[in-house]
Amino acid sequence: LAAPAKCPRVAPVFRPVPVRSISHDTASFLQGLVFHDHVLYEAAGLYGKSSLRVVHALNGSVLRRNDLRGAEPSIFGAALSRPAARYFAEGITYWRGKLLMLTWKSGSLLEFDAFTLTLVREHTHFADQLDRREGWGITNDDNWLYVTDGSHKLYKVDPESLRVVEKIPIVGTRPLSTRLARSRPGAPTELTRLNELELLPNGLLLFNIWLSDYVGVYDLRKRCLAGWINGTGLDASFSKLRRRGACLNGIAFDETTGELLISGKLWPVMHAIWLEPQQAADSWPG
Image 1 (cartoon, rainbow, N blue to C red):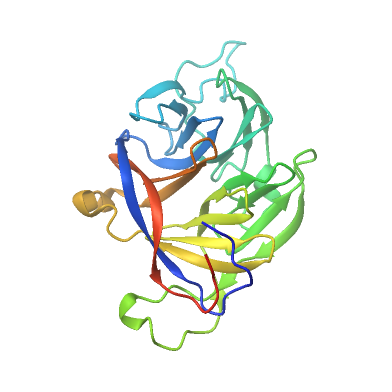
Image 2: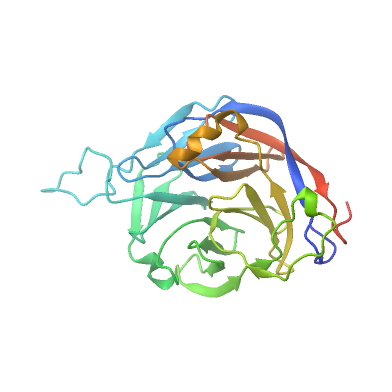
């Protein structure tokens, strides 16, 4: 996925074409997905069921997991053996040997050792500085962390102090259906419910929108909406799971292979995809 030469007036739409599919744990309410050195990490949500996992990138099996034990307060000096019930795990990102995990309404940012998955530190009240005081998605560009809280804002965060240094409003035209492809586009609007994030090496930020089949593409360097990925139909064979909250959520780019992996909450599969144009833009060569 190439970055545009300039910001398009109408963002192009791409259709994901699965090139291979691997199994995914249908008990995982997928909240975060990230690759590092060809190792796939996953965060699964829900209270009492949240976990951090290492997943086999070829067959989807869970190689290691932490059910957030040790993230609860201790009783008489002994760690609780049950999963941490007060946390609803959200997005994750790899940062210098650690995995940083957001939590939903508790507002903590949890720091884990990326190899052992053991909890290293809890940064309480991290989300208090976010407008909605909730943690949703997180990624990084090797210099800064980027966080969402379910609004239309992207928060740029200093990884040392963990303080927000900038609030970036994400605005743009919503995707047009194929039927309306030749219609005059609407005015740019705030793109709310920003959720899970993935930042590509070329500065393109991919973002899920909660309960939407579309993945947004935002050019973080040019500060503009650069496109949409239309994931409609990827869950066609198991769409009945939507009644349980299943929806598209989870994007991970493997720099080792160049593959883009996409999945969803409670989905039985993860798809490695390539993209083909569905709706052209006024400017996006190559």
